[in-house]
Image (cartoon, rainbow, N blue to C red; front, top):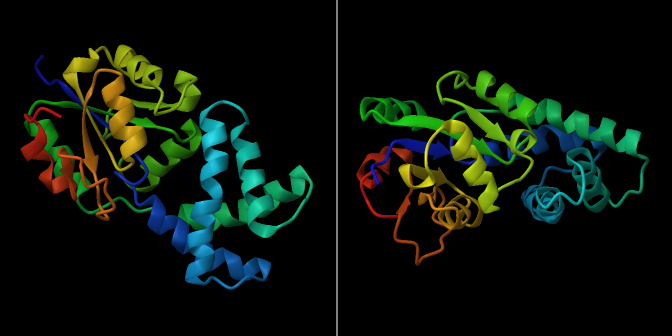
Length: 227
């Protein structure tokens, strides 16, 4: 089936979430009396994953996964309102550090020149992801945006991909998924019938993935590959 569209992940693919989180933590941790060490920054990413997984599975709300992250990270048992206020302090610094990767504009231009439509499928909440696109200058340049709020299901569940394609008006076999998380953006997409390429910006693997690129500048070479 002819390729007609490229479905892009947002965080780690178009926008440097990891860099923004690190910058946000370096600015925020001292305001709550903690040192912004590399260990502290790495631990934030480790702590968050189990709670994000629970949210992706629909077991807790987005706000609750934030509260549970703080309880684990800070070792506190604060009330919900208190934890929400603390997390809001982090968000100020995190959101101020949002940046698009420097390979995004060229990749979007190349995809448009190739006659391919683009859309975004993100596990983030709709409001935050639209603000992120606007802040980084990508708003209106990436096509329709589909989030958990819209679809009611998160990646890597195949239904998230199938529903996004249905709303986009394309068959899964006409769509290439591009994202940095191999389990969510590649395996999940393939399970739904899409082709998929792993954007492995930091060379973290898995090593056995043949459809892999380290920059969106390499995307053009993968558009006609069987992935």
